[in-house]
Image (cartoon, rainbow, N blue to C red):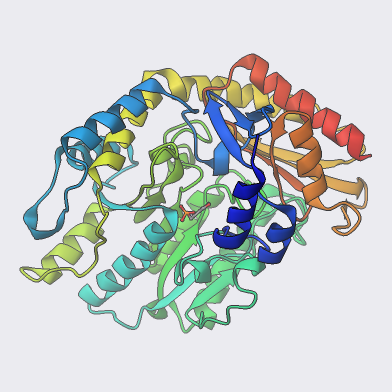
Length: 448
Ligand code: PLP
């Protein structure tokens, strides 16, 4: 049982991420106390299927002994080693080499961060360094997509388009620009995939022109599937078409795979199934399956060599105390063993089952669209299917749907705009996938 004193301590001292601080003080914390496989248990003893893998991160599931063992061994042997001063340790070297093997194309150079936000920040710094090295310092404008999410650090939040990450902050973002999302369900261009892709290509070209031409634009950012924007899946070929524009115009293409990496959509990286090689790729979350913090930036050979040659003997001034942390890297290696040892395969089978199961809810009166790929999915709720009328936020707060699902033994993400998000651990069993679908149906029926 969660003691009142713990609730009071939380209210008094712990600042929660992306929360109404006043709202949280009133509601109090709902605490998790244990987890195993794809299930979590709260302080009242209620056990639920975690249909969102924490925050789309615990891809390997909870309580994996090999991961716990790897972390414990590393903590005993060498809990910390800096990468500064020419020093290093074994786990991050091995992890970087194995990741380079899995990464698409020539993304052979890995810079480790603490998570996704600072991975995105690092790409901004590397992009600027690269263009300065190429003698093109005026390439200092960045473009990303509406409904995109690229973290909430000071720089990455600018590439993020979700309004809540900007409201009230008033930080200067005048070098970061957006073009419309490919979001097909409510696209003014209609839902024809070819038309949506053609529109995105035209919008990117137009934005580049508006900014003064390609000689002003450093990079374009896209998630292979927009996660926090509501699991928005681009049409087939969309990523390749945007990549082609960037190649033609000599603009860096950054694929943000913080959510889609590590089997979330099927393969190790979603870029592989899109048939593209970005100039930089960011990842985090599934990299360590959420057991410890870690993110990474992959740099292409061309970017790495250009930066390295330009700097020569001078230090490239980018680094964190915890870059390439040996414990995080040891966890990363153990998690990679699991992915390679059958977890990705299970994720692919369970992903197909999840998509089919959720698609079966499409006829429900509250369901406007079911979309997703692999173990990443969304159900968009409407009050009128033909008119695609969004749920009125005030009448049906997403918190209420979240609470109902919770009571039914299911953790989902209930986005504010009436979209339910799913990203279960890849270790789910068939019975757990079926239960996710059944408990969703029950929750929707109770919501009618
Ligand atoms: N990029 C994407 C696509 C994300 O989904 C996220 C987090 O959800 C981030 C970046 C930021 O990662 P982090 O929360 O680890 O800083």
